[in-house]
Amino acid sequence: MSGFDFVYGVDFSGAKLAGLNAWVATVELSRKRLVALDRLGDLAGGDARGVALDHLSKMILGTERALWGMDFPFALPLEVVEARWKFADQLRWLRDQPDDAYAFGRSLCDVAVGRGHRMHVRRDTDKETKTPFDCYHYRIVCQTFYGMRDVLGVIHRSSGTMIAPFDPLPVAFERAVVEACPGSTLKRWGVPHNNYKQPAGGPLEAKRLKNRRIILERLRESVEISPTFLRKIQRNPGGDALDAVIAAAGAWESWQATDFEEIARHPRYKREGRIFA
Image (cartoon, rainbow, N blue to C red; front, side, top):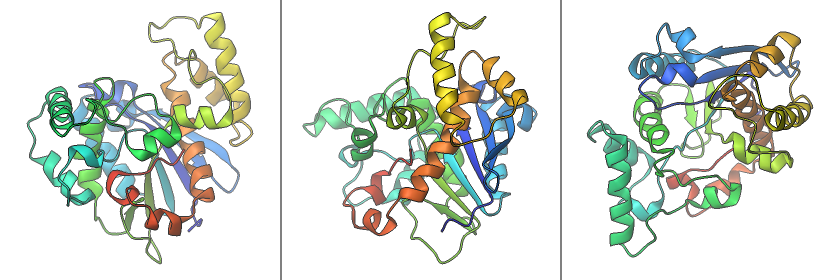
């Protein structure tokens, strides 16, 4: 189960120009070394969501002996889906939804309230890993919608692919795909989990530069990062490149520490997901 050669971290985007701010980090596990760090749009040859996510799906399916940590929710809380639905049912349902992630999120709020719950319901794994938002909050619903529909919906049940924790753990598989959350990993590490991103761009403010240095110091305990990649990370003010590397490191550490038999016994994980952070 630990026979991977590479772990990939993806800081995902569901925006119309998804390739613009989505990043992919590649860590070679034999040396625990970052060997590639690229903007998804550059890899795909275009930033448009359809182009970028299609390329990402093909990238995943083209890897062997690989673990993928993907920074978007893989499934919805049981409170807002049909009682008997499994993970595959959720993916089929999203495939038939109108192409409007925000309307989808609002509809889930209505379902939650109509069933006697709060408008925004967190999955068990969201509570356990202290994610910043529930998985259909307006700040993240595009990631959930397009990640589930256009990535997981494409790679699900493909030969050699295991999506944890939904798929039974087979004797052998070529690639495993897990839900990551850089913010949750930073909280587990006990380092700053906010004020390291600068969405407005430009030179990093002092407090963001300080927090980023603290994060990088801890990250380099897990992953060797060359000066070239450090410069690329520091020149990306939004923190997306950094988040991709954190997603890789967090997913790998969590995978190693996971008791998969315990996951199989959990009443909710196999239907609403579990974060590897």
